[in-house]
Figure 1 (cartoon, rainbow, N blue to C red):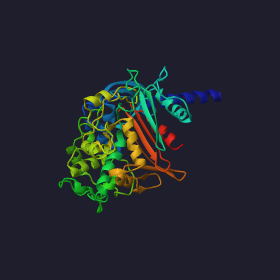
Figure 2 (tube, helix red, strand yellow):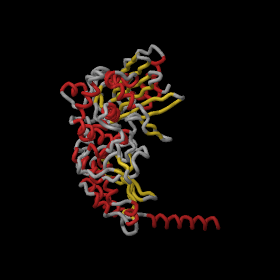
Figure 3 (tube, rainbow, N blue to C red):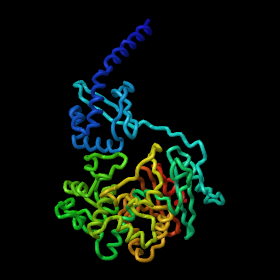
Figure 4 (tube, rainbow, N blue to C red):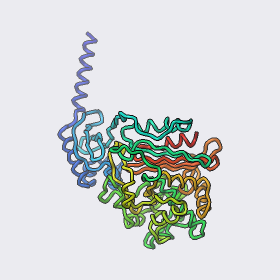
Length: 472
């Protein structure tokens, strides 16, 4: 009897709880549709007006607009929405965007205002290749087997296409090609001619330009960056401490990873930086107020590297590409490295693929070229790493300067552009890069004269492969 009573009571409580928790589906659907329309109309203020006072205390309208614009730059237009489920946090919807599938979660308070909203990407399972991707690996010795062991799982993924890799040891170079320059072609990437976007490895070139001017006595690492900016831009300092050239190079300037105003104009998610011209860069600097003090914390900044590239252009009265080609590539005999895609480069550029394995277009970085605009080949990048391991000629002193430690903390050590790591009393320098359809990794240990270059035409990280070989 008691058990029956308790059971009935439990069922009654459960019924009351469910009835009480049941949200107004029509209200949620209406809000979701309104949010979608305002999102596509680039009207974050209309969405923000639908949020609760509690929500707004946690995030200002400006912060909300910036965050939504960043998301929009990557996700693209919101094409469709469909109800998914009711749960204890509110309602979830499937949201189909131009570049991804997301779960859109919504929670409304008793006043009908949005108290919670967020997006979470729907994991996409990409089937591996059903065939064995091609390779020129000869499988003759332990290095061949190590490369195969590390690269094979990568190249068999369904979202990857091609990869070239070089291992440099004591002056000897071993090269490997895997996959294809294009998923529709059975053509291995060619170390001499196939061009890849190297992404943020560009930053080491930008810093080498700076180092070249410093050793020549024409610039100083501790020069305030305002010396090289238009007079109209206010002094960029924190409590009298100016942002310096060195801090742009070693990511301690305090600048954000990307400037907020990069997302305020119409952004092409497939080429997200193309619109960000020099006027946009200067506009951001006009309003920027440094916090915290520069030089105190490592905070990786694509914007800072882009500013450094722009400053070098102003100082040397030449385009970034002309500076890179004339002052770095020509001395190192890197004849297939640059930025502009001429007719020959267009033919030799590998087709890039995004995280889902979909074909992408090349990226144009406009005023942020110093952060990641360079395109190169495996053979040219081998020359670059060989020059880093054994500096000589007109770039010798500049390369040596770029290897000096300029910042060190518990988690990060930096030269000029180069990231520095130590293992078992050995020090190696490295950098990775990525654009919408490419990934890259370069690293070297001057003591053991070991270097590694990896270039891939897919947005699938290659750094673990490079580190596994370099640190072995």
